Image (tube, rainbow, N blue to C red):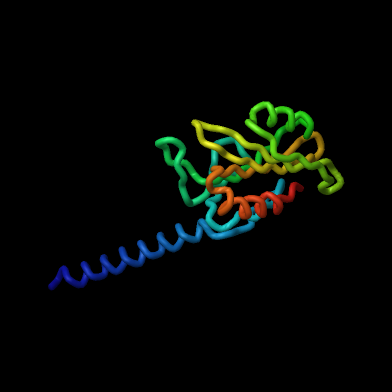
Length: 172
């Protein structure tokens, strides 16, 4: 009997902690606005923003769901933002087109009074198709590349969320 009450208290604390951890983990995949001194992006629901990332990217997130590439499980979609110092949109377009399997579209426009572009490409990795939408935005002598990559077979279900996230990107 002496151990019953402390045991019940311990079990109750474990249940409470487990529930709290599960709730916080689920909330990480909720839609949110990520803003810092350099840019703003609205991360869509179903994507996790990677914190303390050592990839060298300004922003990185990936989808909760997985897809198959050969015998490997990979994330169905990723969203990344990268700063390319001392380059131009023309140089970026040339570099991207050299690596891509196909270019579906390229449109230029003005963003905050500076050059910007949308570029949609197709790539083949390990025999599997990927589609990448890119928003290129010039700020000073740099080009910010916001890109969303999705497994081609999941384009219909993920494409809208990725386009909305890229469209929300505001480079300061």
